[in-house]
Length: 375
Ligand SMILES: *Cc1c(COP(=O)(O)O)cnc(C)c1O
Image (tube, rainbow, N blue to C red):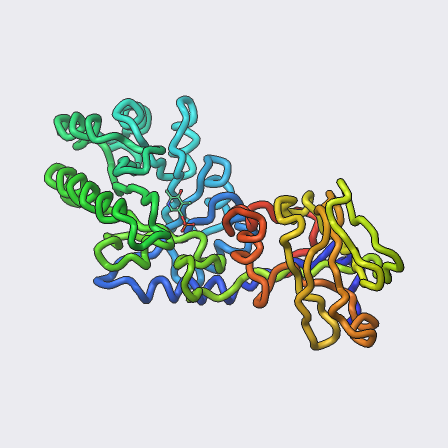
């Protein structure tokens, strides 16, 4: 296998077919006509919203969540006008007109925000569409119980508000047995029924990727998966039902035999015994190969059709890192041109575990220097 010039800084392959399959898998788990959104914030978790969002649209996705106004405006230009785009971090004072002009639905978290949104976007009596996020136990963004109770005492405000969706977020969805899941569910059910007494048509949304796997009671009208679309396991500790989406192969810059015991890399933190073989690859922490996996990382040495697991050695540098390829035969070493840092054999979740983090951070850290190829 020979690498072409534009792949000299590494080849990041993103399998849009796998994204679509993962979307379909999640949607199949919904009953009673529940809808499945696509969460494409942070450039579709670093994988490229310009490619991922149209693929999801073709798969039937009509509801999208992004984080920021700029992300919303970008997505609005990418997709047909019929899609609904929600802004998870709401709208900042002064940006309401811009938000409404792009037909973006802000997720509001205070009565004051709701009032402002209604006042500034009302035309012929009805304000522009918005969503409301309530806090059911995550204690991050969201309207708390007391303020929500006050809001329910304001039927005139709610009547003028074009409230499309009430949502909340689970804190422990990736731990199916955590008691906080049913506790948050009970609170959310109470909030939803309270609001529906005043706004009967409002839809509800609760589950992220892992939340979908908690079962039907968590699905409501619209689910909001992100990570699972991109191949991250929504069931940590169990077999991953999702297809892997990302593969990352980086070129070997140098391989050599170590003739005497040597310290490897910064801080002399790695150790190579005499007679071992090392490969230095083009990929470091500036490319999202997190430095915290130093000494614990792994890769798959690609020798023709064969793949051999090889350990990372020493600290990850900015542009490079080192692998111990002593496990390869001489013949395999001759054929070695790239090391696979992410793929079917060493997944995003595996790298995350080695780096002491979660797959989300691995994906959103993937650097801009790779050649990107979409399948
Ligand atoms: C990011 C996010 C999601 C998607 O979560 P995943 O765990 O990636 O499926 C859903 N809802 C909210 C509010 C989010 O911020």
